[in-house]
Length: 229
Image (tube, rainbow, N blue to C red; front, side, top):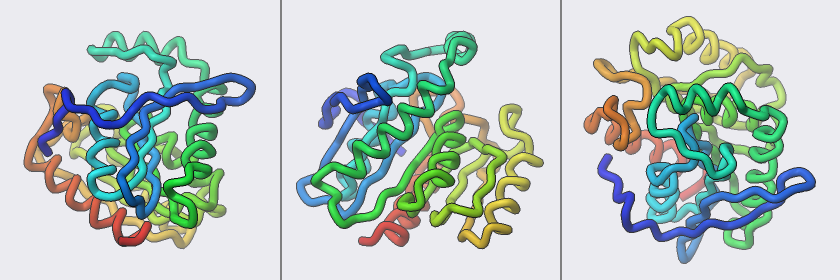
């Protein structure tokens, strides 16, 4: 997947987070056919995830990426680990919920469904959000899992994973798939041979162009089928 990170077309907006204010990146098409929340990986809201919102807008979706790192951006794994150590999980939870409420109320998606796309850390939060908000119709998780109760979910699930992933063990991936299936929710997981964690992000050394392209194609097909064309 080739992504232009220099010609961003959306904008930074503010939204309510608990009793405070958060910031996020919003990209809206001329005519929207649904909304997609983008939950970034532990790096923070960098240009890749902003550009992904723009790509979704090109496909006709109002896309919003709440900033879960309060403006901070990591460029290395060590920097990301340090940010994770200092994470205020309660604030992140409120930010995810606030981002959902912001997009849910946006005039461009009135009467349309909402999906969530999450990456690694953001994938875990995407899965979590689907258990809290039954209006979430679709969840796409990139190389991230979370052991949750999916009995109240109304979503369909798509997963993209790397084999022998040091960050996401095979047992966690299969356990998640089975738990979703046991809750009678539609689920399809794909594994991409010879890829590593973060293979979708073209600003990472793990980026795998062919696998990323296939994952993007599958994500769009899934989003179209669940949110409506």
